[in-house]
Length: 117
Image (cartoon, rainbow, N blue to C red; front, side, top):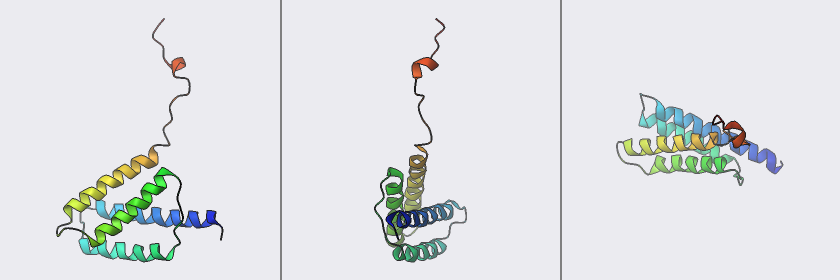
């Protein structure tokens, strides 16, 4: 397989893993055992896929966030509240990073500015 195909597969697995875990974290009926089961199932899938170097800032942030999810799977406090807040905050920052490229500045700002003269 070419590197482009492997990169696309790796990206799809990462995005699927992160989106579904964020949905589990945002539920009102959050259950830690279900979270463990969910993370462990995707952790196996992450091990099977070959890791590829990612170039864009969003994809590197996505990879770091997935590593953080797996890290908190094994290293957490008893009630998991602090870790859940950290993960949700990082998820919001990740979403912000993804949408950063959507909004563009106007090319000619001075043409848009009209002060009435």
